[in-house]
Image (cartoon, rainbow, N blue to C red; front, side, top):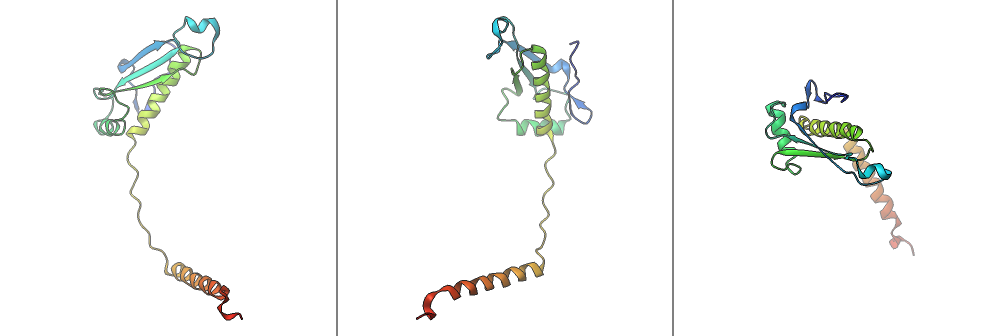
Length: 145
């Protein structure tokens, strides 16, 4: 594809392999005048995640797990129709797919290390709690009369 601004990097040096991208074009809905009725500007980009060799095995496993709801027979698809030109929609779809795969292959976050609450803070909280209880107890009308 001449003119495309690829390769689209997922993360690091791993990019979307141009040969494994399947493009489909159709008529887009929305504004555009007479021209829109004749041009196939909507783009659907499909990528066979289950059979690709471009991703490291660990990433692939992670992506298949995280995108399970979006996959149809191991293929993930992205659609773009917000631009009037097919070329710009292709760009948008490719960028969207790269971002989706980057998110799906990201390593899981590090587990949180629980920290202890300093004793002074806990004591102050209990002291203020007692103080508040005193204040409220003082408001009850039993001593008035």
